[in-house]
Length: 337
Image (cartoon, rainbow, N blue to C red; front, side, top):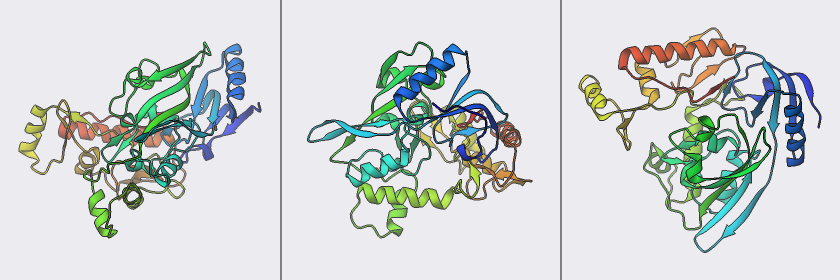
């Protein structure tokens, strides 16, 4: 186990923010993880876990130890004529797992193509896009408690999934290291093409027969057309959640904003945060080296050498303006470190 000191983290976050970790270590094996957890507990060292670094905004240097998760491996653990259960180690890149499933014609996660990050982060955030969420295919995950070092299997119910939420962001926040995630994929997939512009994109692609490959390709094309490449412009994808409001509040807003877009939810309506932000005039806003992307108002960007604190302050201004104009409270998707 090689622990590095005063490690620059510029290469380990898609926002492209340079900050320094007091200690840093890369974990490739479960045995290395156990050794590290014993070390951290013995020395009472604060532990911070990074996967793809695609959902983090650094606003200061990191005290304690940053752990880079590189646990790799995928295997089929159950199979019948209709479904296959695939167990993915938490350090696997999410999109690579999607491409693997598409190549095998295993359906269920093709709408989640090109979402950045690792498998381990997926259940924490209950990642979702284009009408599909991780919870739709989730079977179970294996995790290890950071202090007791006990392993536990979390079932679907125990994860308490909600919109961009799970038990790992609430009751068990910071308590577990996720080792693996098992998903149930379909051998007889039913494609979901009605959400967003997937069908329109496939029409432009001149797709004759809809397949999970064509759906995945369409989603990839849409995301690449709307979202900046982190290798070129620092960002963490969607910075804010789409807020949910009551039907009463929706009807009140609809009286003023006739073109107010929405999606039905169990308890009311979900409003696209990008629309709210754009209506407040933020789309394309730039201040020095940071701003709001000109194609997608949900994406805050670091054009070159921005500070995390600058981007955080910008997000606070956006939240305040949306609250003032629409009486809707935006929530951040991105974790602030």
